[in-house]
Image 1 (cartoon, rainbow, N blue to C red):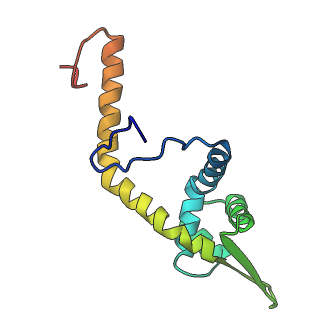
Image 2 (image 1 turned 90 degrees about the horizontal axis):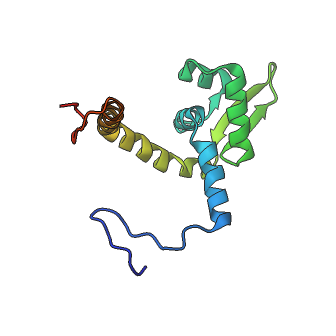
Length: 147
């Protein structure tokens, strides 16, 4: 960790973070949990076991196909169990596994962070976009306001 200074509030990370196997694994996990529907499905199942249509109603605009694909992917990754009860018609419930429940805390943390900092991100985007417009128009600005 030589040559790396600690920024206030930022933990210093080891310099050997780029290990290909780790990068591949992190990328795969982020691809699974980083999409809109997975986060919402995990959040809904965090309330307890749910039937397919209960999840679909709770999420509103998700299509049957997208919910099926999302649940199947979560089941494949060991985050959700699918239980079929021998009734007529068959009753199927989805529930987070222990591994899936361990995802709730980071997902909730990311959601909280996004709600707390969403305004700051929007402001930063606006400033960035103004700088780009000002640069194209040949105006020099330092604050992104065009003044």
